[in-house]
Image 1: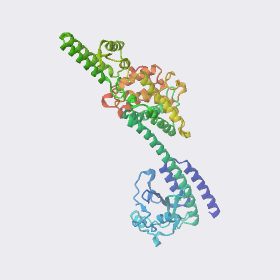
Image 2 (image 1 turned 135 degrees about the vertical axis):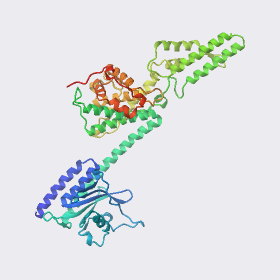
Image 3 (image 1 turned 90 degrees about the vertical axis):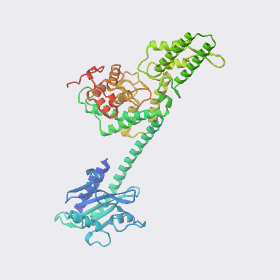
Image 4 (image 1 turned 60 degrees about the vertical axis):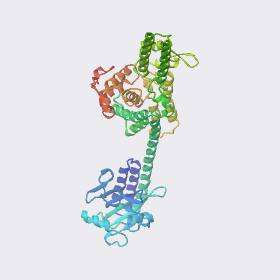
Length: 533
């Protein structure tokens, strides 16, 4: 082949390599593609690719020898036994005795025609390795990889140039040097760009972890929620993606879509950084900074003291004293039980709280009479379910508005533009009665609807909350089924959640053994059999 034809061929190869390198997203695959391309274009038998380590050493990342069918490092997972090459001696002086390290120090390509005749460089290590493998490394071509900022990030080294016609080992030519330098330049920039993106993605993820860590520091219960919801959301979305029957059979996700959804799950509650801790972790109905049930106990003790004084003064009979005292003790026991947030408080229980508030009074040191329970305490103790009153609920609900505002103020790249929508929709309802925007089902993405189910199911089954016990699987599925019928949750996604037993996979990973009970799916409210077609 003529020199001009060879030039055109190599030029085309370099163009194709550049295109391939720019589209490669996996770092290990990128390194392999760089070395394989260099070997192919120069018709070499093998080569190595080194990267700079934090310790100022060249660390071999990929090793390829075609004639021995050897490929190590990179995506192969095979360990490379080549030791690191230090750039400096122990006394701090530059290491010029290894061709790869000299290429770095002098920032130039080094061409060794015959390693066995080389006197300048220390070629003992390669030749010793050759003896072990029954191989002869004769010609070497080594060039530094320099990024767009002028920093050398590694070294590309080729071994044994081969004559295309005779298959004999020859020295590397000047054309080979030019080709390798061009390829090394392309490769360094491609690798640096991919590494920069990788590091920015890691930084972004660490920033998310920082926010969740701040939430976790305020409330470990909420922090754990922020870690579990994205996993369950991904599990549900994957089940919908893999489903081939029903209304959602055409829904499909790419790896980029999955990453976008996972990021949204990680930050879906970032607005809780603004929520007061005593609201987030409100364990009882009377809790603010502390549980005020102790105040009621103190008032009862004052009333008992006054009864005892009245008895001792003769203004109260022993029978009335003891009867009233037993009544007080029974009322306090009932109030303590009512203070624990349950599923539903009956009308009769609320009437009894109101009656207790009016039945007992206590006097302060000025002889002023006060109700045993204040109006505000009656309101809190009468909370129908859970521990949050109307004001508490508004404060909690505000977190999603803060989340949306926080995310809306960020400039999202194209592949993450839907993160605010996914993260901001997990409290919406299918009938439009959710918050904060009152979106209906058709106004929400499938991903946001998946997260809504994940958020509810995780909250129901979480066993680390101070205000409730974690539900068993059957209890949680019964509640979710009712929410489906009430048009709170997406019915099609909930069906897939049940059909694919996503709840079971999640339970094995996150629930306590005592929470995992037997499930009869046909008994779940709103259960629908999987369609045949």
